[in-house]
Amino acid sequence: MQLLDGTSCSQEIRQEIAEQVKTITKNGDRPPHLAAVLVGSDGASQNYVAWKVKDCEEVGFASTTIRMNESTTEDELLAKIDELNTDENIDGFIVQLPLPAHIDENKIILAIDAKKDVDGFCPENIGNLCLGLPTFISATPNGIMELLRRYNIETKGKNCVVLGRSNIVGTPMAILMSRNTNPGNATVTLAHSRTENLTELCASADILIVAIGKTEFVTAEMVKEGAVVIDVGQTRVTDASKKSGFRNVGDVDFDNVKEKCSFISYTNGGVGPMTRASLLQNTLKAHQRR
Ligand code: GUN
Image 1 (cartoon, rainbow, N blue to C red):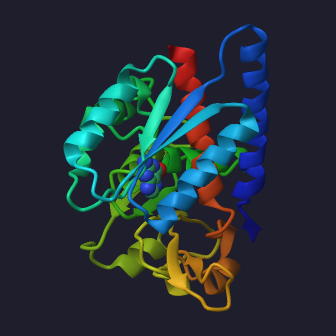
Image 2 (image 1 turned 180 degrees about the horizontal axis):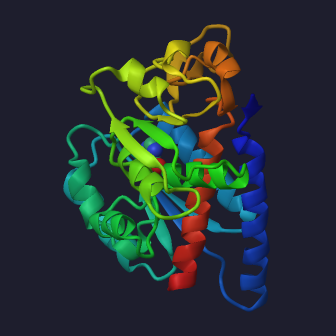
């Protein structure tokens, strides 16, 4: 079993990006600039945004965090998006999800200019992804593709099961894995909560990508001997023994599954750092496309 080390892969990517930023600024241009909008005080979201800012600093990007109260109205958030869409000094921005329940996430995503949608969530970017046209690929699926690429994992002709059909991860992941690319060219099944015979289906997968948001949902009997297992899950559970008071638990029962795998990613240091590195790649792309 080999661990898919997203921490070291993402470090390589950040170094590559930092080199490109040096060239950009040496040529007299300003560095790429990412903005993040954070509405409310969700603990996990605050951490994610803080990491994104730290990543920007590390590679030499400019970054701006816009904090808005939990009680921010949909119109106020839309006005902020309008501002960011037209701000020439900002190459790309994200609105951290989830948003408070009184705000319609779809309405917000639709308001983001596709050229600045470095999350790759808006219809134009998802449509381009489906058509194989240049686009911003959403960060988590893109990070997983990068992990597969950097570990030279053969995907062509393999059975790939993607567990979870979210707009952010499962759906774009299934599209990417089925495309005529490397990695890609897999035979993909997009499975979800209504899928029948899930255990048998997962156990037939050469590559199992799990983004279902249920802690330790994938058990050893659901995994084929020699499979590649990628765990996107990161659920916070209370843990009094930790200084933070919580720990992150994945969607895969790692301890019991790992011995069956050829490659496996662990919740911490697996997909998460790759997602963050992909956001930097998209921001660099947005800067180049200006
Ligand atoms: N919440 C969880 N993952 C993401 C992400 O990739 N982008 C944004 N904007 N919000 C998220």
